[in-house]
Length: 495
Image 1: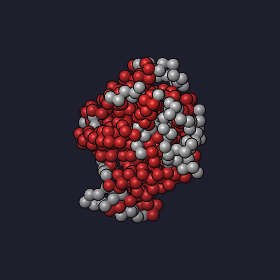
Image 2 (image 1 turned 90 degrees about the vertical axis):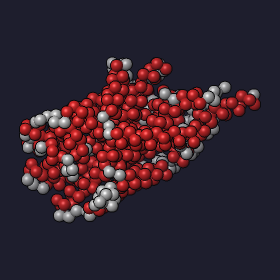
Image 3 (image 1 turned 30 degrees about the horizontal axis):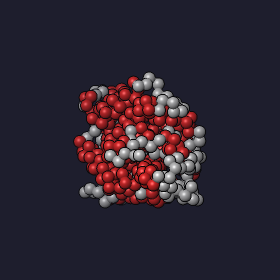
Image 4 (image 1 turned 180 degrees about the vertical axis):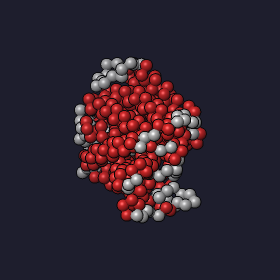
């Protein structure tokens, strides 16, 4: 008979076999368990290959840290922001290896939330789910905010006009709200509702464009390289490097986005780990080269408050408008693809939580025609659009970093737990240097969390209170595992 103590309910784990069975449209729970609500035999379709999945990871990562975060990160660290990117990349690399193992062992939607449910228990899983929703929702908003900057840069260079200032930023003395951000979120949600196959094809094309654009920037930027711009290298000390690394870490959210597609990937045990590692290598190389070219091309003090900064650097180096205009177009396309992937990831986490009964089952309802969670996507679009229109960029970036770092830490711990509890579970990839690599991943994440601004922890505290309220007010009573336990107890009494 199942135990009804609070501790046992918080620590109950969802069997990996159940997670995999549900991903294939089967029940997977013990006989007598309530039928899965809202699915009606429909399940997510496996239509994503290796290149498309790698493009999801690259698409969700390249852009957030490159196209606009330098404006806020460089003033914190100076030229040593290059070290900040290296620290963030090392942390992401350690965690990527952990993600690769977990994704190959548990190839389902839900990412860190699903991994935590299988290894650390329901209470931790729900808290991680809330962190992920915060991470993805706020990240998408932060990315959408910057779209107006490059849109205005393109309009200015191509047509000689800009959008009204009142409609291109969060409310303050000169802005009303960010209209381009709202339009971007609406277009992305429309595409996602149409279907995943169409969305990933569009994203793959956009990723190819953004890589070419960044290679253009690196090539032109290095022609304007001045070594004097790298001195003094660390004007704000090692503390500034840590603060900048913590702030830009949200740009590595793409590694988590790969694993949210676990149920829609062909041959997931092989494809998921390969896509995660490919994404990390491509992203890290481009990030460091772009940061080096940008810092070498202009004094670090000029980055603060600079809108569409990389496009402006190209214009200053060449003295012509066409490279900057081309880069602005690439940034517009790139930011669209990032927003597409990040919102996609958030809808899949909500889908997984709805399927588990942790949130209302309507979040797990799929369209019979497209196989996509339409209502879920609309809800996400409204929430992300509101944040993008009304909340400043720096606040959004730091909150996303906190959620990302917590999720990454949980995955690393999950690897250790799963190795101990299910050593014979089939794995398409194993973390090298175990258990040192997972422990280092947790340590690096803790170091970056320490460097976040104080107001970020206040926002995290609000999210934690929200998570506790929802879990004890709804989820603990409606959890699918809870209903299965109640059914088993009822059957035992009848017997």
